Length: 178
Image 1 (cartoon, rainbow, N blue to C red):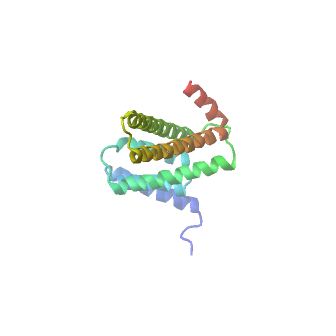
Image 2: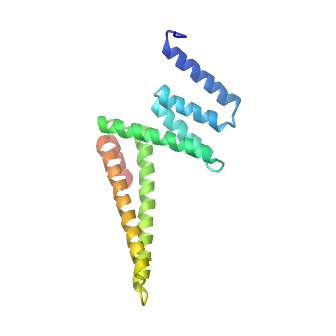
Image 3: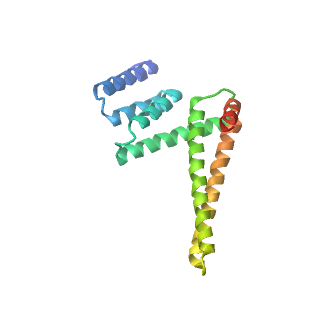
């Protein structure tokens, strides 16, 4: 038996209850994460969910627990999966804020990976430069560096794929990169 015939009414009623809860319990991180999840999963209000999550992460950089970190990870993973599927299904010609946020995050990850690869090459040269290089350490370092290079390449390909589906993002990021 349905409680109410209008499902939209029920969803917005629940949204108002969650918003009132976030106003009453200002310090409740779980209440805010509930709001973000409800926006994303139930209302399918993706831009608002992305903005709320980004704002939440910026406000709570220092004081997070492992449970909060895991919830954020799961929500971000769902959002990225949704965005990836959406971009694969049809290329977007207009610029979406979630595309820019994902692109920016991936570029930052790419910079970190490139720094790790560079540091690994420094380690390789230090090993080679020694009088009697330890082959076991050299093998581990080369293996680690190869893995890092492959991960960096995969990340770069993801960025290219993201750009290829959004012409506006592609143009914007070409300007951003120069």
